[in-house]
Length: 341
Image 1 (tube, rainbow, N blue to C red):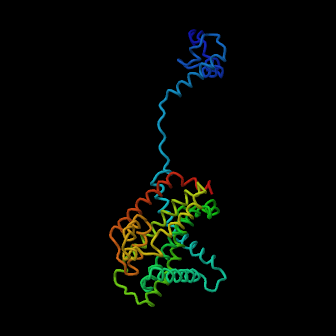
Image 2: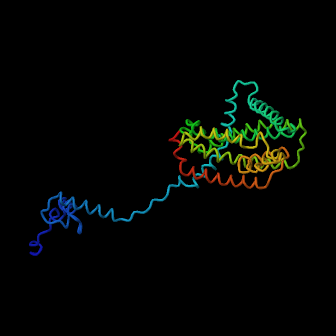
């Protein structure tokens, strides 16, 4: 072995390896450019912390803040999906609507026929009275009154009971994970069943008075479809508004009762026009009543009365406008109904 090898000391592995103190010192050393690194030597730690917090706050506030995207649950599309999803759950609201009728007439011998009997007695009484007052043939006037009452019951039921539809179903709304429109379809379906029960009166009058029935009676089918479609948006609109403002429901009851006398149900526009004079000139005011057009498109084909084309156009326009109004209300307040009931 040479002298060079003996004089050169071998490196000590323990002294050359970085110890734990070196790593801790590197981690504790402030980053270049940070407020702590720029602080003068011997600065108080609290002063350094304050500068660091101010710098972080300035960086956060200077960052661009984007506008959050609108919630998809508060859009018109979401409101429309509620209507479609509720319609897809028709097995539920069909069963619930039928159960409502069975519950209402439980332990009754005649059951739902009591609805038909009470409406037939009312139609006969009003038809006899006003036919004598106006000196009109009962054969002509009684079908007019009877069918008018049947249609009016559907309209009034959707308005009055529709204003309480969500309040009455408070338990189901809070416990059943379903679309809000399920309760609307349930009520409209129930009112439709009542109307179908009462149409037995119309069939009886066709036989008793031998009213001629032609193919024009089929025009009543699209009229009924439009009537039911309007029942959906009316129930949804007044149901949400009345849940928010509880004074709306009693107000609607008073207005519906007033509208009954202002609508040609127990009186006829054609009869007033036949009388002539000033009354005939004022008969045109009935056309400003939207309920007149709803009655015309359904009642006219059923009792062989002429129906003006403008009545169809007005009903279609009201259906579109009312549906848009109901969607707007659903968009704004639909998810708050469960907190208001």
